[in-house]
Each structure stands twice: as C-alpha cells, then as structure tokens.
Image 1 (cartoon, rainbow, N blue to C red):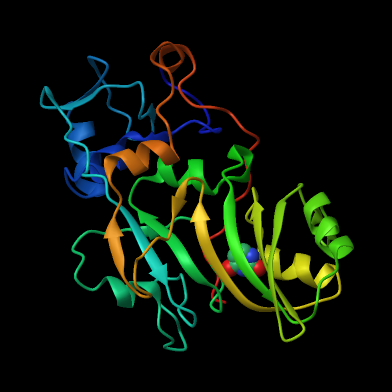
Image 2: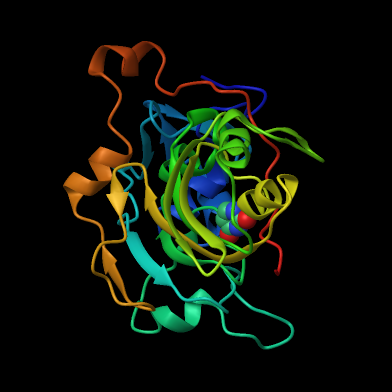
Length: 270
Ligand code: URA
C-alpha cells in the first residue's frame, strides 16, 4: 500500500485525506496519526506522509471510517466580463460573486477567458474535474463563435482539420457554419482540448478574429435555458452522463484511466 509518488492516480497524503474529509485541520490530523488513532486498511499508520489511494484505501479514525465531504456539482452561465479566479487584485468581478448564496467551497473546472461567456462547471470533486478538464480524456467542449470576417469553407475546413498554434498543432475539431451576419460568420466548433485561449487563437490562425465566444456545451451537457449569471446543481444523471463510472471489474484492478498527465498551474487572471 505505501507508495512513493502520486503519478496520475488519485493519491493524497494521509494527513490531507483526514483534513479534506472534514475531520479537522492538518495539524490535528498529524497529531492523531502520531498518536496511533488512524488506520489504513486495518493497519495503524503513524506517518502522515503516506500516500493514500482514495479509491482503494479504507481510512479509519478511532476505528470509524471517514465520512467523505459531500460532493457538489454546479453549472453556471458565466457572463462576459467575469473572471474564473477566486480573487482579482484589480477588483474585477469573479464567478464567485455569482455564487454568494452557496455555503460550500467549489472551484471551476477549467477556465473561460474573461470575455467568454457560457457554461462553466464548478465542483469540490477533484477527480471529476480532472476527468472533464484534462485533455487526455478528450471531453468535447462546444463553442458558438462570431468571427470578425466572412470565413470561407476552406478556412472552416482548416479549423476542422487542425491548425498550428505556438504550442503545437490542434486536434481535429467539429465545425458547423451557422449563419452570416453583416460580413461576419457565426459558427459552432467542438474541440477536445482546453488550451489557453484556444478558440481565439485558432480563429486568428486562419486570419480572422473572435468577436463573441460562448461555451454552449460540455460533452452531452448543454447550457439550456439557464439565465446569464444563473447557476443550478447538476442532477445525478447529468453527472453520470459527463463522467460515467468505470466498470466494476476494472475498478478493482485499474481504477483510474492513466492518460498522459499535463502540468497544471493555478488559474491566471485574464
Ligand atoms: N477558447 C478560448 O479562446 N477562450 C475560452 O475562454 C475558451 C476556449
């Protein structure tokens, strides 16, 4: 059970597992561990730095299993002009200003630029967030785009085939022309990555500019009739559609798909 490195598996140190489960602070958790009150899979562990696999290992405090923190999954219609960070040094509005009635702590699943509106998921479930945001899992994200110029079929084809950006070629995308309006093209694009300003940079790579960008769907989940700035909880069915549970027999031997990992940085102010 003891492991040397977190790799791609859902591992956390024992003291963190106790504090995340709401049992107490990490300092308290370290004290309990030192006092021999904590067991992992039935064995008393006195090292707070042990890596624990949240999907496999049974952690008990004084013989009682930890109660996991209640998982929360929200869908927010982010308005243009809001940041996906918690606090902005310049005092600009953030998505947390729209969640003031919410008691629980949540974080955004991936990011949307300040000038992008649309569907943003927020949760306190790190594994769920990873399954949606890590490009290795190829979860499709759909955007409605208004480009500053008329885009020819050839330009739209290039977007669909993939263009080369400063951080490498983009994966093939699905592109659908919707309408022309005053010399501008409105189209829909579905991508399976989530690089910084990806859609804006793709459109620039074919010689145009994004005037308006709205994320309309993540996988099978669409923004629907939610008002701009409004939020609601996901239903259990929506959650399952987004991240289906792995088959039971795979869970015991290989509980987590092991895509190539991507370095994650804290959200930047945009
Ligand atoms: N692509 C962008 O350019 N911006 C976003 O916010 C999301 C995708």
